[in-house]
Image (cartoon, rainbow, N blue to C red; front, top):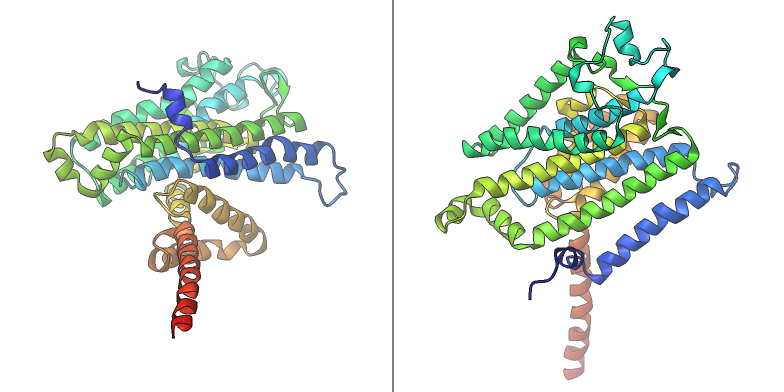
Length: 383
């Protein structure tokens, strides 16, 4: 008898993985809120608002990195345009947050401030329904999914892959960035959306609201890891890995790679949309710079640094690179891009399997050394 879907998804992780996930959620949902709300600010154990915002932002990045790993590490599809799907999710939810400002804006009008500045008299048709939280949440999922599906269908059907596919995704993202920079597009131009006030009627800057957003991001990241693990260990994931390694052979035995690649591509875009929707209320701004090709390249660097094809590696890579970025941009802002380029070169040449691969090598060497020690003792005794 076939097990229910939820049971199969939950059983994708072993006991150690569930333990690690439980510790992570306990820290995010219990320890951090307690240290932020109950511990005085002067205490060394107090978790500041800045730390919550920073870690919440990096968890959104980690979610995007896992989404990239699904298509690159397991599908062999290197995208240099995933920043587009992240930004689309952010803009979709940012529209709702802009409508929640109401008459508290600088002009005291019901329309967003940038529309008043541009002398717009009414909301554009694509803003209709943007005052609904449910519609905004749906749009954050559906918009990246539709764009990814349409683009992916024609790209994969045309058998575009490798470096050509990467260049096309980068061009798509750059074109979207230029489009959103225009005031006529109706998304705030180069300033984008900012100055948010409320979400579901609650102050967006209140400590309780920030902690709820932080907790939701942690839950989304944990759920994404579980879902991703189930996907890559299922029959779908095995076929996807086979397409990555030998697409022509997979076609020869009767599988159509188009639908497998299109499915994982669309799922990955939807996960990026979720990350973008969680990112915007925590950071407080979304603008076209999130679609810049440089940001999409950074996503690939997170995955490469952590270790592609491992799921947990991209999470580690996102945290390591972005924590380093936060420190470098404060202490040595002019050297950050040089460090990022050097990091990518070092990882490519010396750590092809990333930090997770380095850790696995270390564990294997220790295990081999432990196994060799009893053998040497036995050999000495026999001599």
